[in-house]
Amino acid sequence: MTQLPQLLSLLHLASPALPIGGFSYSQGLEAAIDCGIVRDADSAGQWIRDNLLHVQVHAEAPLWLLLYRAWRAGDREGVRYWNDWFHGSRESAELRLETEQMGWSLARLVGQMAWGEPALRDDLAAMSPVCLPTAFAAACVALQVDEGDGLAAYCFNWAENQIAAAIKAVPLGQVAGQQILRGMHGCVLDAVAEATRRADAEPPALSTLSPMLGLLSARHETQYSRLFRS
Image 1 (cartoon, rainbow, N blue to C red):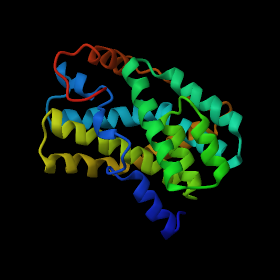
Image 2 (cartoon, rainbow, N blue to C red):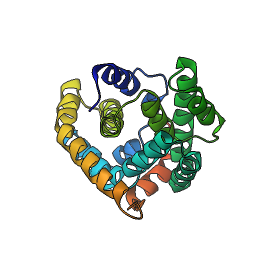
Image 3 (cartoon, rainbow, N blue to C red):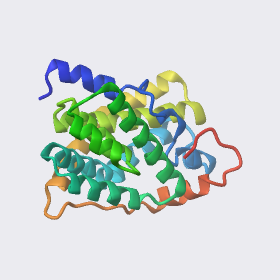
Image 4 (tube, rainbow, N blue to C red):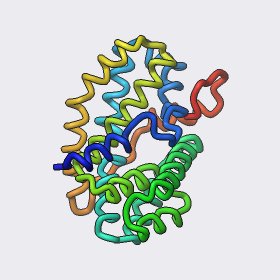
């Protein structure tokens, strides 16, 4: 269980105010709105829950745990392997750009804030490209955050960014957005439990099958009117 100093560090790391550019991306949500799949608060909440429990939890969330454990063990080959695996799983140019840009920004911030041991910061700075889950996992190890708490924060931050995008693009009111976010609390706990099960499997049970998200992300690249970069 994360202690108070680590909890404060984790709140800092997972804050929407962290300057890594998460507000710029919707991860296909804007394309889903353009196609009429997401129309209101109910459909926005369903989209976000489905993406967390049937997309994120099948690959990105358990992969985050594998990256965290590799960083903690000093297994730099493992970090590189899973970083490259995740980068290769991004199905569109926009999804690759998103994880590269946010990962680079967070890795740079880890160095500027002098989080963790110099060796970890040097290894993180040397990676190119560095994906967002790789940098976030490294930051959690550097700040001595428990893996379960770190993954919960990673998933909650993802959901929070999705809701912020929905508030702007659907559009939704602030209260509706907060109601969706409150309803995500149980989903985040379920996601952490399932991601842990998948990461603990031999071999890890990862699946990137999400054809609708891939098609919508590719469609977003040529969408006529856009607020977001993905």
